[in-house]
Amino acid sequence: MNSVVEARHIHVRYGAVEALHDITFGVPEGAFVSIIGPNGAGKTTLLSVLLGLESPTAGEARLFNRPPPALPAGMLGYIPQLKTMDRAFPALALELVATGLRRSWPWRVRLAEREACLAAMARTRVDHLAARPVSALSGGELQRIYLARCLVRRPRLLILDEPAAGMDAAGEADLYHLLLDYQRESGATVMMITHDWEGARVHASHVLLLNRTLHAFGPPAEAAREDRLLEVFHHAGHVEVSSGSVHHA
Amino acid sequence: MLEPFAYPFMQRALMGGILVGFLASYYGPFVVQRRLSFLGSGLAHAAFGGVALGLFLDMQPLWVALPFTVLVAAAIVWVGHRGRLAEDTTIGVFFAVSMALGVIFLSLRQGYTKDAFTYLFGSILAVTPADLWVTGAVALLTCCTFPLWGRWAYATFDRGLARSDRLAVLPHDYLLTIAVAVSVVVSIKVVGMVLVAAFLVLPAAAARMWTRNFAAMTLVSMAIGTGSVAVGLVVSYHANLPCGPVIILTQAAAFGAGLAVRRPARG
Image 1 (cartoon, helix red, strand yellow):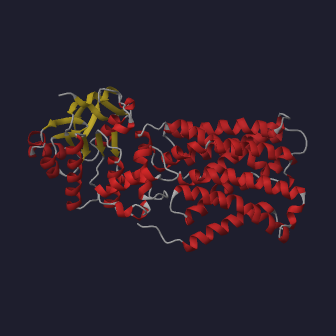
Image 2 (cartoon, chains in turn green, yellow):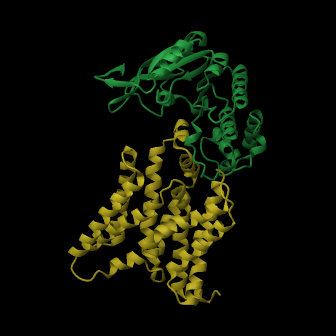
Image 3 (cartoon, rainbow over the protein chains, first blue to last red):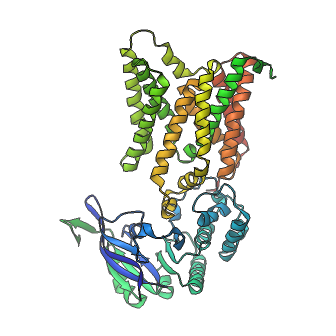
């Protein structure tokens, strides 16, 4: 099976710190990949490289056999970390979802767009919040708005940066079901950062265990084995770079 | 009420003020939401450096201030993009350097520097037809940027999200900042560099108090920016007060009223 997301010997270095070291993997079409790793493991950096927001110091990423910037934006659905969102920006939930169709900020949402957006919002059960300012939404509600924004364009690849952050256990389980439903219907590929090991074991087809280097990539039973997880998280924050090589301090 | 506008100089003041109000209050919401309120001050001071250079070279100050300020605007974006300094620090550096250069140029100039003070405090009642043509041309150019509003607003909301949608955010940053710079330069002759920054921030800040979405904020900002000029001119005429500050206080009243009625934001 062809890989729709490929990382080939990706290195990302910020000055003396190597955020990612020699990351290589291939994600088959239709996979559900949970990306797991401690804080500072380079998870968001990896997604930035895959999205084409950041250039690797060495190596390359390919999406659908193209460099990331060459991928038509409509094929990609991205949910950023919500803690970076500017809640002071005057926006209605419906407008935020409409950016998923427009790829620019709407002066006004046209009727056809409104219908498509409301349908996506109904799917994530937030259509009743359409006229609500984003500043008045809870973290869980915002996540569902962002998910609707993602789904409204019917992407073939979803890249999600901690979409479950700030959600309770029921909300998180619901999120998995929404993603799995969409995946079943569309055959899309999902890559998401999560801190929920259990959820990853149950729902993901692949786990990518990262701590600046790739510790494991494969089926959850193998890649998310308890001893592997403990080893990676035990060493969290103790990786340094010296003379171009990574070692544990 | 409308009696002041029987005089041609007041008609020109109204026209000039409305054009400046339109320019500043259209760009204002981007400036305010990007937390770049200091940009207006910085660019106005940069323009002062350019005006002083024009006076020193014995050239039309506006035509020297324009490229000078555009250059400073581009440099602010360029340095900001390199990511080592916060944007307000970058603006502060260029602000200080431009002012220092301006004072040196003025000190090197032989003779009286009254012209420079015209630019410091503006002279809305001395707006000439030529000023109106220049400001009108920039307003027309600004209308040509309307199709870019959605992209600028998107990048204002979330640069990363906009970039993931393949929006070339950096070239748009240059374009927006240069457009603000050009607007500031043509505005300082009318309202002065001290007040132009207020024109850029106050109507947008007031509009934010009254509105729930960015399109409405832009419209209300423009309504406050242009409406305050008419109200301010009438009030200043009858109360025999300087026009610029009265216009600013009118905008501040809209902001204060919004602040009083607005419920506190969540979280």
